Length: 89
Image 1 (tube, rainbow, N blue to C red):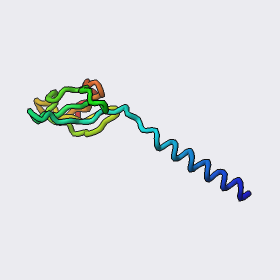
Image 2 (tube, helix red, strand yellow; image 1 turned 120 degrees about the vertical axis):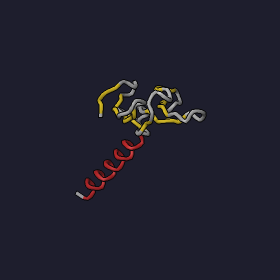
Image 3 (tube, rainbow, N blue to C red; image 1 turned 90 degrees about the horizontal axis):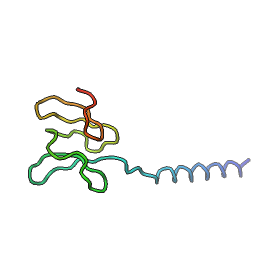
Image 4 (cartoon, helix red, strand yellow; image 1 turned 180 degrees about the horizontal axis):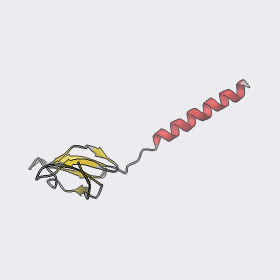
C-alpha cells in the first residue's frame, strides 16, 4: 500500500512538471513605436500583426483571443487577433 502511494505521488509530480513546461507561443504582445509613441501588437518572434497607430490605445498587454482597445474616434472595442472588431463596449 505504501509503495503504491509513493508511486502515485511520483507519477503526479512528474506529470505536473511536464505539463507546466509546455508554454504556448500562440499569443500577441503590445509594443510601442519609439518614434510616434503609438501602440500595436506583434507575435513572440517580433512580426507586427496589428500596426501601431491603428487604435488610440491598447489596454491588453498580452492576449491570446481578444484585446480591449480604444478607437481613435472614441469608445472601446474588443478585437480578435487579426485586429477585426468583435464587440463594442
